[in-house]
Image 1 (cartoon, rainbow, N blue to C red):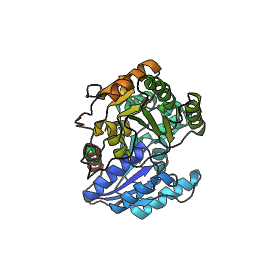
Image 2 (image 1 turned 90 degrees about the horizontal axis):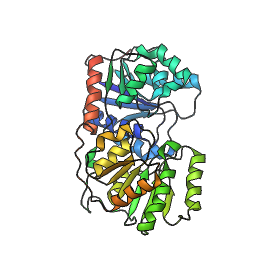
Image 3 (image 1 turned 135 degrees about the horizontal axis):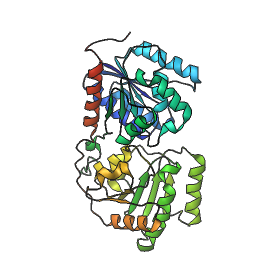
Length: 361
């Protein structure tokens, strides 16, 4: 089967990490896979593209920022060149654009957003017009489908397929196979884009309380700077508390598995998530986790070493981080949340709509 995966932008973010893993999994299973996008590749995606190409996955990203018509023409050229049997569109704008193309290839849309995109009236109207151009609507959480039902209405094929991670990449390994990074002994790490919804400011406030009992603790914040003003606010709060020597505000990291392996606590105070890849990676690594008490994290409440708290309460959040620093790592079984599970579920959807060996027009 020839499978085209479409993302909004090739960048170091959760949906794109999932797409990379699924694409490589399907390519190794004997399918031909291509990844394309609406926007050009960002600098932090270079190493991911190298992984994709080494696995035989084709990458056809635009070289420049196109306008609306240019995006459509780019997608049409990719479809004509790659001739997919099946198209998987990730995120709202990508799904809208690809369904405007005059092609008969089966298209499915994967909803990754942690917020209700259809609060935007223009997006709601466009989706109502294009809804049936998708053969299936996939939500990474039930909330995605609930939002769709409420705002758009019922679709003939709707299914929840949770995101998955390659747990073997994050499991504990010996020092020869996975040499330790040089990190502080009591490091707390938060990984995520610098946007208000990721709540790095809450983590800094809680960490200031942690230092009162654990003066040797260190906080590492890393991620893509998406909101420049919010990133500046993060840096400003660190300076306000005088924590420049205790808090590192860094950019994106490609060595997430090693970072999780060598840190002591993973923090995720997100105000909203659909179904976070970063959260799953932390669970797979065994690191103690302190996260916000939001519905999409609820499934992990029974796992050892996971604490879900009100992260807007600096005192409660700080106590949870402090306790986690003294909590041992755990061996967690992520049945239903592995990359193999997710890739197989996508393939089941593809086989439902694609005739074997059929080539699209």
